[in-house]
Image (cartoon, rainbow, N blue to C red; front, side, top):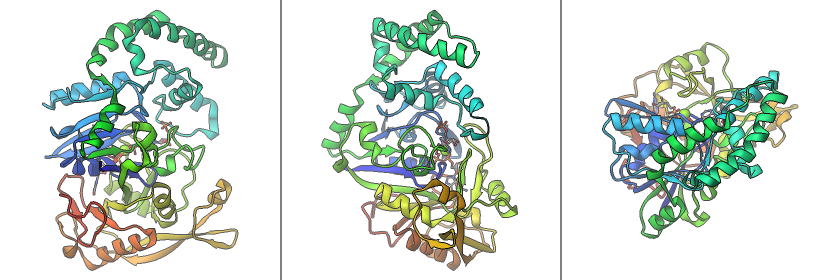
Length: 436
Ligand code: GDP
Ligand code: IMO
Ligand code: MG
């Protein structure tokens, strides 16, 4: 029965994996419901760092069945590399289930992503170049190849043939690029990949539904984040799926009433990778300091993340879009040395004070952030494990974020490690009393 969603509330890399790992302690199933290997989810467990791109972050716990849901787009080379890495680390990967309806990212998707970014010139999105967009295009156009097609070679062959004709025409005629060889792709997918993937393929929808009926704890692990959402993000500087919590239903095959706890993840500040509007962006030394102390470089692409102050306007919108039941604030420790902190509480747009996120992109691009200043705490919080022990100004900052966001805060991150977390004693939401 209890379905918990962990969802990013900013532009990604908020620390979702750390919270999923933490909650996996008492979970039975962890499901990825959208996105693909554009995700970079870092878990630091017992001093060892794992960076997951496709595998659900709960896999480190033997009590968890990790599931790649139907909403995910799957790059098999990346998945096999991840399985190998886990096995080398002594982790049992046989529990992993890959949904039969998940779509495959094919090598031509990856190539088309790179070429489309070049074509966009000054309007480039700054994608991860992993083929995510082109794979979702094919899914929606009904030209996609699904995981289950690998089990029926005649079907895979016929569908690939039909699709590849068009892909090669676009690659050669539009982009002047090399075509893909059909026989080589067939050999790779049917002779090499299919037998390796077969043991993992299953009816993930039936599995997750049964787990919920049996009152097991199912975690839905979001990738990317609310403002990278194809519908609700800063279009076109977004990803090609719906990371918002509601998409866990379609991406895993459950109903809205199965989602009882929605944990929003936010950094104590904001970062974004790639292009697009960012009202509270910091282009000064304070931003550079945050990047340095927070190691704000992409897990997947190594790109520098753009830093900024916490944006409460966006957070209020994210709280509504996801119906958050709670908020986890991560990386509070990165602010330890700062004398003063700012929080964006409203925007000024064309001389007007605006407290909600404008629907019109040109207004967001013109939005001037209005800040409230709070004193920093200038002391080391990384060893603190209870809210009462935090410096008064840190507590004040957390209370201010909760008040501004309109969401109760349930936990605070003060370091990358599994135990570097502070549960909020006053939290009364659905997770109250759950082991931290
Ligand atoms: P995700 O994509 O939302 O799962 O987040 P990422 O793994 O891409 O980025 C979060 C980064 O912050 C990772 O390097 C984590 O190890 C690290 N991290 C997570 N929580 C904390 C925290 O509370 N403090 C610090 N300093 N680092 C953290
Ligand atoms: P996690 O799950 C941060 C960004 C890219 C780019 C845009 C579109 O680790 O939070 P895409 O390759 O998806 O077509 O790129 O989305 N992006 C992310 N930024 N964290 C992520 O994932 C991201 N996944 C995609 O940088 O701006
Ligand atoms: Mg990440």
